[in-house]
Amino acid sequence: MLTAIIAEDEPRHRETLCYLLARYCPEVEVIRTIESVRQSGEALSDTQPDILFLDVELGDGECFDILREQPDRQFEIIFTTAHERYAIQAIKNAAIDYLLKPIIPDDLSAAVAKVQHKRRNGGGEAETDCRATARTQTRPQRVGLPTKDGLTVVLPDDIVRCEANGNCTRVYLKDGSEVVVSKRLHLYEELLDPREFVRVHNRHLINLNYVDKYARGKGGIIIMRDGSSVSVSVRKKDALLDRLLIV
Image (cartoon, rainbow, N blue to C red; front, side, top):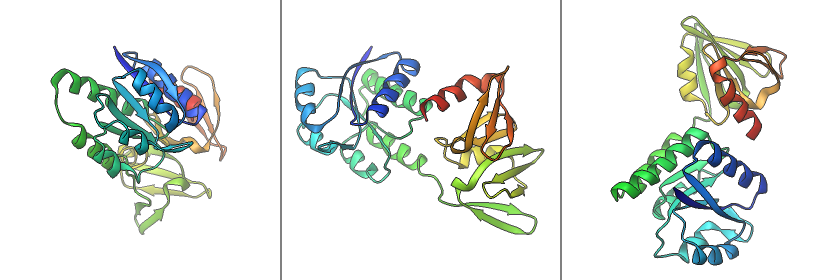
């Protein structure tokens, strides 16, 4: 069993992280949550956890103030933040991982696995792992959709959903237009940010920001804000509902 302290000043994010750890990382016991730099000194002197889940911007300062007070720390650091710009500072502080909010369960499980691996093997892999995570969580600001007439460039936020159509993909945009591209759906699943885009069926990739309703059923039906209906596969139902509950 690994012990953990969560440093997070937003109650909703604290609750979400506790929920995700309980559901997806039962090997981690959260022994305390703190909201500020001031509270961190007492918490870390009283208890040395295995992991410190650390938001960057706390109510009374930044997490780096905490780390400066812990030069001989034995715990592993996993950053949990909405900002990509602190990744280099995280690397310099020997963080073992850097998770962007909203936190994806698979990313959280992988981060905890890195801690377990390091504790078992005594390896010094934190810097490399953190660099890799920072790179893979950086997503394109624009997406080029190749068509028979050329290239349509869109913002990821303008994509409502994508639907597989044989060897092609039909991309539905928020202005009501559609673009058919000669690329398979899995390419856009890999390209688009998994914090916002979720594969709910072998034919459907949706933007969670445009979900209006979920109708129960064997797998269920998602009603998007543009009025379209999207089938959910049975095996992807539970994961989707988890994501909808923590958005």
